Image (cartoon, rainbow, N blue to C red; front, side, top):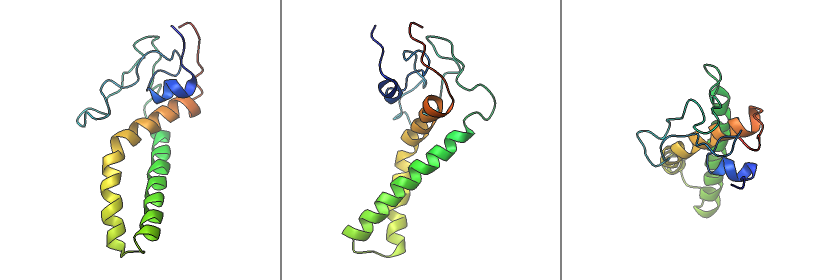
Length: 125
C-alpha cells in the first residue's frame, strides 16, 4: 500500500507514525462522540496520549483557529455588513464557534500530534 504524505495522512486523521491507523473512533459529525480517540493506534500501537494532560497544548492551537475564524468573520461583517452593532457580531460569531467545535477539536489535536509532538513517520509499519 502506498503511503500518504504527511499532509494527506493528517487531513484523513491517520496515525502520525504509520499513516494507516485512525486517531478518532467516530466521525466528526457524530456530535455525542466526536471526541473519542483510540488510546493506541489500531495499526502500529502508538500511544496517542503519552501522559495525562498531553493535549493541553492542543487547546492553544484550537484557540488560534477559533480566533482566526472569528477575526475573518468580524472583517466580513465590518466590510460587507456596514459595521453593524456589537450584538450582531456576537450573534453571528457565537453560533459559528459552536458549529465548528467538533472539527476544531480534531484539527487541533491532529496538528499537535503531527507538527508539535515530534512523532516521526516510520515507513513499513
